[in-house]
Length: 168
Image 1 (cartoon, rainbow, N blue to C red):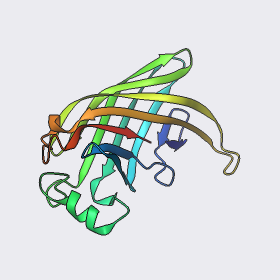
Image 2 (image 1 turned 90 degrees about the horizontal axis):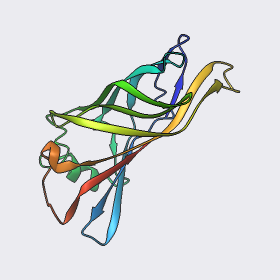
Image 3 (image 1 turned 45 degrees about the horizontal axis):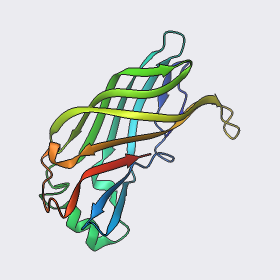
């Protein structure tokens, strides 16, 4: 997750460097992975006050499974239902700090029109100057785990796993 600075404490999520990846057990034999290629949003960060917020939107129609037929299958009702639900979102006003580093964000995640609490784990958080653009930026590795059934995605349970790991 990379976020070049627009102001001292306001960042725009860089869609060229942010690709949420998910993985789920496939029939208990392997792990199936996919990703979303379009992510937008804003992050506010006040390191002095140890506070901030995240407003992230994922274009669900940018689903990439590496194979068109597999993408079509996961686009159907029972999975991502892309005809009805075009976006997913994460919103948080509660960033958790360890010293000057963000280590988590507690907020709400919306998938298939259902909103549930979700905690994102933040690793390798770092702010500094981008050596290419010479602009301030912050970056980190983000991860979370959720149960797809909590959002109504129950097709083929338990053959297709309920636990979904997400990273970016």
